[in-house]
Length: 306
Image (cartoon, rainbow, N blue to C red):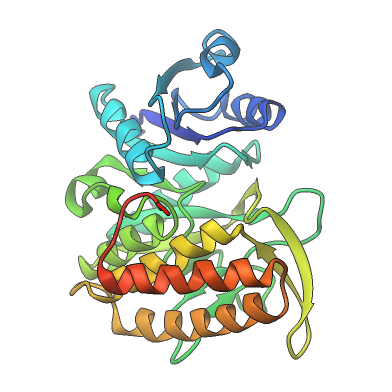
């Protein structure tokens, strides 16, 4: 039997304590240790969770919002000191199913036996209080291909060109070869960049259909008509700034797949039209997406500033 030491790294920023409590309870019987890395929340997180878990819990308070990449790297470095074999990256609003991590471990073992060089395995996620389930993504000729676990002929382990970081099980061996998260991106595309780098280094990633997690993607869901009814996660104007800026920053990097760039440019064009014309506040969305393009072309990284 393989001896594992799995450390969950939970990045928090102004979390809903009830949701975060649910996450901590869900992790208690699934991981060996928990590290909460807080990006300067106003609430006193250590007072809530230092003694609330049956597992070892460490709370690292960064004092201010240093971004997702910095927080994840802080947790990973602490996990290395704890001699972890794997890290489980999680946002504060993600709730793993009781068997999620065991399903991911089983999948990683099976895939490794086939000779795959694994970057990460990740769950499918469901939007809380809805019947909406996520898909896994592969690069298409012009558009990203969405692979749903309910699709006919869909394999149990879906090859994915990238995953969202929350819920991902990553071995420390993979991090040692691929490297840490890119802190300069601050938020959005931090996970995309890492998976593009992993793919360039011949690592594979897989979505695992029987590993399930509840997760909020965006501030809220909105039904819009674009040829047909679509339910879209809506982010704040500032988050759209980061999405556009960081895409343009990544387009310049030599290891980034041309296929991803083509797929992403088309996606951003559709997003620009949609958020400028159909989603309120349209003017603010337009300004922030335009600013993101400008700053990305100018090579500006780090946190957004006026």
